[in-house]
Length: 334
Image (cartoon, rainbow, N blue to C red; front, side, top):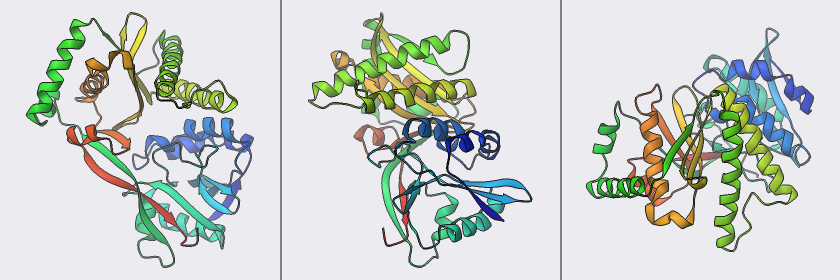
């Protein structure tokens, strides 16, 4: 196996077909799919030095290490301009049969340079690869949680503690009485692209309203950085909607957004990525009920997991979540 390195945006664009081919394997999360790296690099390429390593075997790409060179430290691509990971999971992209040889080849190419790899799932092949390596540190990182989806919503609801069940039923009735309507966008059907644009603009505006009420600037400002983040969200959502990897659920009161969940999905997992709640309707607990409605949508489909991603919010424990951690693998010198 030989390693080739990709450093330019045009070269990255040429990888689309191979990248898509390699990420059909359900060992990889939705965050490894091509639209994430493409849209991220379009917005942040002036801040990063791309160094994607390709494993070539029999003249075919069999592995991709999506890396950047951060002043001599090799990190996963996908950070913002503050060097914080935007995406909840990161990994090398390679099939199980080729993984050992690919890992060996990549880290031989990295050589004596430092590496600091964050947001690695516990079941990643990198965890097994480095478990017996010396001079490498493996440390717990972000808290993560997920829900194993049963065959019916009634079964899931029955597994919740009685007090939480009563809360859900109470606020569900209040939301119905208040005349809130539920909308979901899950597939690229006629009209959804326009709806998506409208919902995202509401999401940005409401997000700013909430953060400014706390005396903070928020992410979606009208600054250069804020526009960069908004463009990333817009372009990524548009691409993922077309590929069937995006969902958005929202409660509305007329034209006013009350609560919104947006997330991603692949063949077996739905990922709840970002939420926002209108503080004017906080007394209705719309975020909690909207999450229940979103769960109900995915239960009974081919999806087996609803991933609540990073964060140790108290409500996640009440949802019968499977709690765990991502990991950080570093060379011990970073």
